[in-house]
Length: 401
Image (cartoon, rainbow, N blue to C red):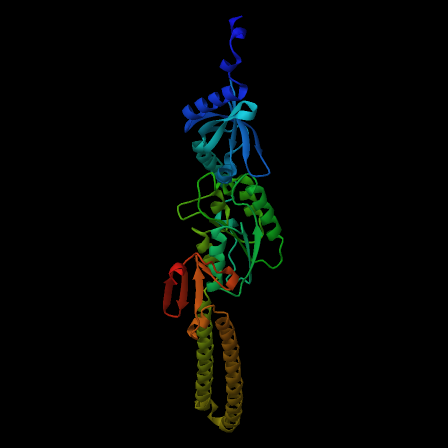
């Protein structure tokens, strides 16, 4: 054949031909969309997600690199119909091509909403949302359980709010994923563990905002039933104010934000101090009223016409009453003083735990990226620094200092 008579110089090598194919495919198949069904989903140890997208006639190998996979992990489910956006990439050493996924969108996003409504209707019909099943929150909790990821901003918001609002409470975090395929199971395990505690008085289940896919673990039936079955009151603080989840409906209390969840779980330190002062004043007024009533009663009896014939006995009785009254007044005075002393001790204890007390004495606090810098090792040289004084803050740029 003429083919074999040609010079070898005119015949491309395998690598050269593959390179031509690579250039052609990667040039013309960029930023494209493809729809199909996910299959053979696998997550590698380094965080990359490998899968196949297919229809009845063909299949295409795909990969999403770790940087993107962390965001879309929960959408990769075998059998799920999705739309992928990305580009074709040729792996030259093996002469294979694959689809590099940049974004993934579930064709059934509307189906997620339908599933939300279906489960909401089902659980409501079973009575899981009834107010009669909701447990009251403790007024003054001493230990609070939190189900969240320790790395989320939501958990940091809760810690900050509680340290300022009610620092006497101890926080017990059960770290759990708040999105992704393992999240629902881990949240259920957390509720089961904390629910068996003998000293935790209220539990906050929380995470920040996100898409319906991100928040979906809190719409799982298993999580809803775990919240309903928990013997300890549960506050659901999921997403932002506009976000609603099944967890919100079944929980004993729904909070619009993680910060509000911390507020609902605890009293205000200032309110408690004010209440103590009010109670002390009420006791004092009541004791004075009782003493006045007793005196009026005695005066009435001593002037009664029916008792004039026993005036002498009344006189003796009046003396005894007067002595008893003085003894009662003395005892009550000591009781009032003792209560005031106890209230003062409690007030001083609360005031000593006030993180802003040092500012009143002329000290200052250092803040950076919204965090209170307590140690030199935590200070970053490349970020702005804020110095907090009693009456305000001053911001400094470390690069200009």
